[in-house]
Image (cartoon, rainbow, N blue to C red; front, side, top):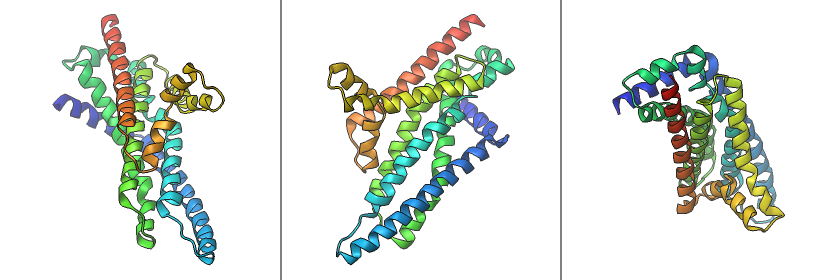
Length: 253
């Protein structure tokens, strides 16, 4: 555990020793803040109309859920920026050989780097979620569905970050690593579209592989075991592939 934590702290410091970490925090917060402003404005307008008609609107359904879904989509664009340098930069600088020949196991190395990426994403979500405090100041949202939504965000991010970690081990070019991670993440997001016009078995498989149907339940504030298993399995797959890739690099070094 000590080696894992040491690597994690080293990677976290590297994010903020350059403008990258601050840029990611700022970009994510500004984008989500803009979405928050628009969603709350629409909610206020529709709420006034509903009050005139004697109806009522749910804050979680019309504000929290869309915002969490938007955070999930924006994450697709920023996750590659988090993972693209983790191993690609080590290979470009030639320090990967030092890591591979150090008394640190491949598992400790990859878990430490993966945890740093998860913490970075968690920091982005936490910083961008400051806007949600205004909902409690001026409204009465339900906290539990909101927390379930954030859990879904972290599970989704953990899975996609593990895949990005693996892709980063396959190249020394950060641009290639980042663009490939984005492409894979986008495909996993859009596979579900096939089920909209095809009912064959292969279409159902592609729909199940997609991130969308598994994240939707979290966005609604529901924890479904099959969705948790999906994200955990995808995370382990990414970490397993990373371990095999590092093993291959170790043999070649």
